[in-house]
Image (cartoon, rainbow, N blue to C red):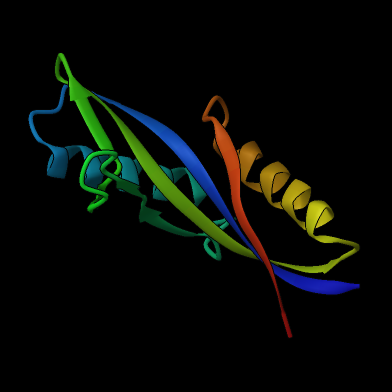
Length: 113
């Protein structure tokens, strides 16, 4: 059995926002409230998207009609998993229970000591 660091991406919907900074703050705050106190070991951060034209990185936020979709990155450590796939399933299950109705995708799974 091995230990893994799992990174997931979440699509968070924020309504009635005026700016990208507001959307980011609300998304991180709401995700933190739903994860804490039981899952305080899950790290929440804003995702990064690369511009298809210039390939410069920018925050994963899109706003239309005062509604934003914010890409969040969620990281957690999974101990004693049988494989990277098993670790990803565990992380999606644990985080998915707290963040119901939030789409999750596995970004990266890496082994650590």
